[in-house]
Length: 362
Image: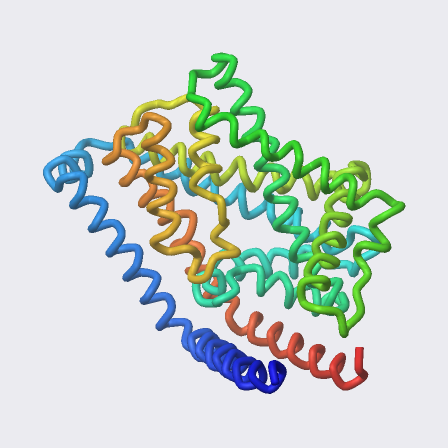
């Protein structure tokens, strides 16, 4: 009786999931619609925040005399971030005897993932990374684990930097911040401990194995352990994969420099490096590559209030974040448009590989 009752419920849930999937696919086939929606979300968010701050204050700061050289610093910071991520994704493909990804493909993947596809795909820029790993020869599960590993590596590097910044603020070596701002960074310690325990040679092979018929929760856990194992191998092999870790550090440094330069452009208060790092990490709990439509509207709010929490004036924080997002999100769409034919080819090869793998029953 209970099984008969649950069956219609399961069918309705499956039908709802299928409809949602078709809706996502419809949007992804119409990138202009998503870009316009992202632009609308950004503009609407900026207008609401500016109205709450008071238009006279906003216009006074906007029309004040600015040193436009800071725009060059924003651009250089984002170029450095791009170059760093090219090194990261190239080494992540090769770690643990993975497929080789040449520099040209790595560059195309990063430009596309940070540009128009980050803005137009429901799965964010990581979808492009998955396609690239599959094109390079990685299997389905291996590609998924490497995409997850990219995210884990990002958070590992940024978490260590945030922990160091919190320590400097806690001991008043680079300004001061309260417990509510500094203590959350300690969560990186148990996260590292669990990751080291799960990825030890004794456990990694067992924990990262899951059959095709396993439940989605078990498969997700297995992929996460495999991803953490990839990150561990990359970090513990500096001679072979040191450029991957260095590149990810360069990626974060370049992006933070872009935000710092944007704040200096609008005359924002010169907060300490540690406060800037903590505000940045607080505003980037999710990265633009993993958020649908690049996190338009969400990142602007989170980052503005994170900067305000670190002592930056609200108007300066808002205008600085808007300038930062111009370089961080909107300008990268321009070079990505030139790669659209390449990405279409990449997507075609990806779909062919998926069908081929399904046909052989892997």
